[in-house]
Amino acid sequence: MMRRAMDLGQRRTVLAGADPAAVAELIAAVRKGGDEAVRDLTARFDGVDVPNPTLGPEALAAAWERLPPPDQAALVHAHRNIVTVAAAQRAALRDLEVEVQPGVHIGQRWLPVRRTACYVPGGRYPLPSTVLMTVTPARQAGVAEVVVLSPPGANGQPHDAILAAAHVAGADGVFVAGGAQAIAAAAWGTELLPSVDLIVGPGNAWVTEAKRQAFGAVGIDALAGPSEVMVLADDSANAGRVAADLLAQAEHDPEAEAILVTTSSSLADAVEEALATQLVDLPTADIARASLERHGAIVVVDSRAALFEAANLRAPEHLHLHVTELAAAADACTAYGGLFLGEDSAEVFGDYCAGGNHVLPTAGAARYTAGLSVHTFVRPLATQRLTAHGAGALVATTAQLARIEGLEAHARAALQRR
Image (cartoon, rainbow, N blue to C red; front, side, top):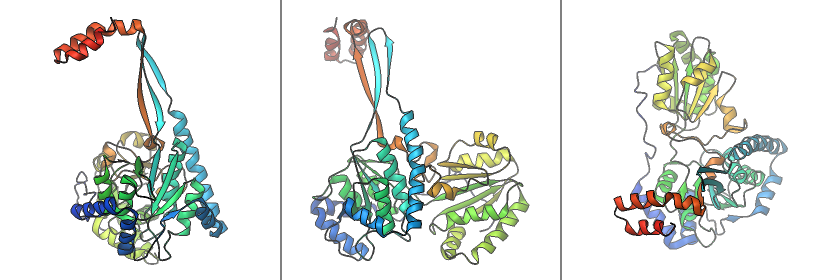
């Protein structure tokens, strides 16, 4: 990882690596062939035959019992914290009604979607944390049915840790399928998997492209790209901790992005040295090194203001501040998926068990959207309640505006309330 000049406002393509036409073919196959098509595609892409892809509560509970006690304790601790945050989010959403003029009442009701699918990748590592991060806020939002989508391992099932996490978080079941075929099955439904209203959760480029193509038939949370971290640091920062935070992101994937922006040239040198030292015995060094070489950077800027401008241009998924005067720094940062304040607020705590959600916007999407939360699973439904007096007071204005637009039936419907 070397110092380099880079355009921090230039964003990566979320869907790189996925062939839209090929994904469309997979979706069409599932829409036509249902569960048999899902089975064939699972055998083709995952190398295992899964004749029955549905796992119910009993199978999830059995996986929980097989899990070692320390793993069980970790899942319970993380789930407890995620519940605490999600419950507070739900409590903050209040129905409202305002009387905008006498007899005219406008309101909104917060209601959850009915069915949600939570995609959990298989890939290099099992990700039980993603199960907790997606299923838990759905449950706290009040979603009636929550199913996990996850690809099989060699034994025809997802890793026990994924199934156990689904048990802890309260999922109704797991549909054993991954990739575009899983997204298609959830969006349009099969014999074994009724269609859902909303699909959430991260995946590879094929999953993301399938979510993009399914949008409209079903809601989605976001289009996820490779994971990102930007560390902002001044000369007060600890080089070893900065390097560790960068590597924690880089080991995700060769396409992950880890960027340090600093006002201190000496810190930049020290971080480079710390990275080299920490990579020596890191089991995931090959992945982390590839990530740093392809997408990592150390950028030295000439002012504190330039630090925050860099962050706001990049709008990173994770923004970690290793600087003094944290409150002022936080105020200056306005575009990020998650903000981690101070060197003790390691981003890895947010990945697992601090309680905030780790499904966050990537590729600059934090400029206009936010990460997964209870809010993802609820909708503010609009209501109107008018008295006869209130309606009568709106007749003239409504009829006038309707006739300006040439909609006489609108005008006459209003005039019926004179």
